[in-house]
Every structure is written in structure tokens, then in C-alpha cells.
Length: 91
Image (cartoon, rainbow, N blue to C red):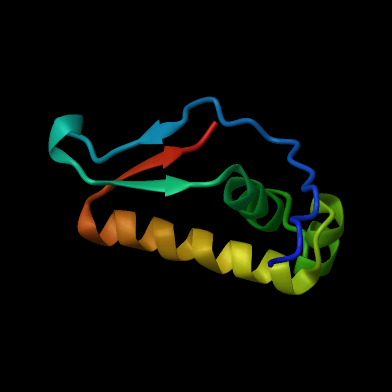
């Protein structure tokens, strides 16, 4: 049985929860779902310019967990850009 997840501190709420390539109807696109945790990790690392140690403390998670979350977010964004998929941020 896995250990229960630690509570994460999420201080960011996106103004839009859907991003897609221009000029393609949404019904024709595959979508990638990003978690709120992944968006918060991206925000802290790239917008707030925090190092992983500081950012992980703000999110109340370990640095290795922060790194895995950030890596997953980068992979999803890369796949969406390279393959022309939509990105939906879960509520």
C-alpha cells in the first residue's frame, strides 16, 4: 500500500485552463492534461526564478519530488508543442 500523499501548497490559479494550437478546431486535437502541481512547479521555477530547493519548500514537498514534478511538466509541454496537442490544466 503506497504512502499517503503529502499536502501540496498551490498558490497559483491559471487565468485559462486550456491552451491549443491556433487554427485547429478543438474537436480535432488530442489533449494533454497537466496537474495543478505541475503548473505550480513551472511557475516557481521559471516565473519566480527559484531554485529547486526553495521551490520545493514553498510547495511543501521534497526536492526530488519537485524535480520529478517539474520534469513531468516539461515533458508534457514538449509533447504538446512538438506534436500539436492541446494542454488542459486540471481544476
